[in-house]
Every structure is written in C-alpha cells, then in structure tokens.
Image 1 (cartoon, one colour):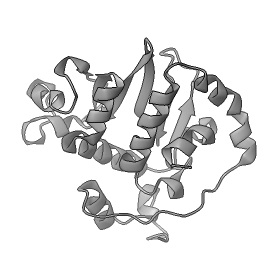
Image 2: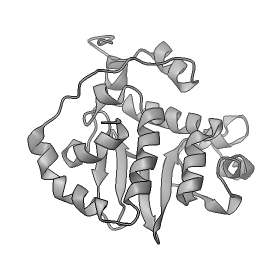
Image 3: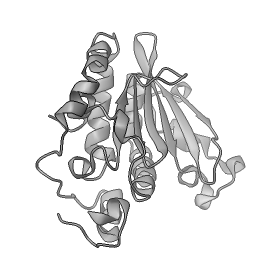
Length: 219
C-alpha cells in the first residue's frame, strides 16, 4: 500500500478515508508493510526498561493484552510505527503506568499494575457511548459500557477536558480482553485511534519502545 496523496497528512498518507471506514466497521483488511523501519540505537535505549517490565508479575498479562490491541486497534501498525503511534515502557509520569500507547499529542491506551493483575485506561469519543452521538456527559449510556466488560463492577469512567473526549477505566485482564473483543468497545477504540492518527505525526516518537512493540506486532 503506497501513499495516497502528497498533500494528505497523518494516516491518510497511507490509507484513504474509504479504506479507513471499511477497517473501522470490520469490513476491510488493510495491507500493512512487511518490514519495520527500525532504529537499533533507539531499541537499545529502552531495552533496560523492557527487561524491568518483564520482571513485573503483570508482564505476561500486559504483553498478551498489547498483542490483542496491536492486532485489532491500530491500522497498518508496521507502516505507521513510532511516527504515527508509539508505545512507552514504564514511562516516567506521576501515575506510574506500565505501558502507554499514544498518537499525535493524545494518550490512547494505558495499562497499570493493580496488585498482581492489571487495569486499563482507554481514551475514546464520548459520542460512541451516548444516545444519538450526543456530546453531553449527562446522556452517557452506562449500560453500554458495562456490557463491554466481564463484570459491570470492572468498568468506570471519567471526563477529561475537551470536546467529545471520554475515558473508560477497566479493572482486570479478563475485562480488558472483553472490552477489546466486544463489538461496541473495539469500534470505539478504532474510531478514536483513527481520529488521532489522522492528525499528523506522533509527538511521542522519542519514547517509543521497539521491544514492547514487538509484542503488539507479533514479532
């Protein structure tokens, strides 16, 4: 798959809007690059953090969940790795995440330790969880969120600043997997990711962990 236009930016350079809509609805398979453009110097920069992650009791669950996320939630992930999305390993932020996936200037998906289990934070469009796509938090359909997880008590939500922005918190690997596999949850993730991958180059290229991305890309 080549570039679609010399004037397009973000993901639209590689995948046109019709193809994106098909992928969003699960009706199209996008043909990704076979090889990754990789910097060995950059890989080694975060290798020690990755080894530290592997020593955590949550490591297996984190990498398994990321494999599912990479396979189903990021369009043409090899073609767009680092420059249009990235994953950070044990980033040095106050909330102490295990990993965080970003695109453009936006957090997409974060995993945290929760005892020996994990919890997740998804940033999504509010309009995917309200009646008729409303932008009013008062019209949030809580049942639609709870149906996406293994147990209703595993789901929570919050409202970051910004128009049509919404956060979902999910506790436990089982419910995180359920959210990723649900038709409503997976479509909401894909739509938000398309929005931000289309906005332009990723601002978090410098913190990308190729070692973690290996597990997202099945390498």
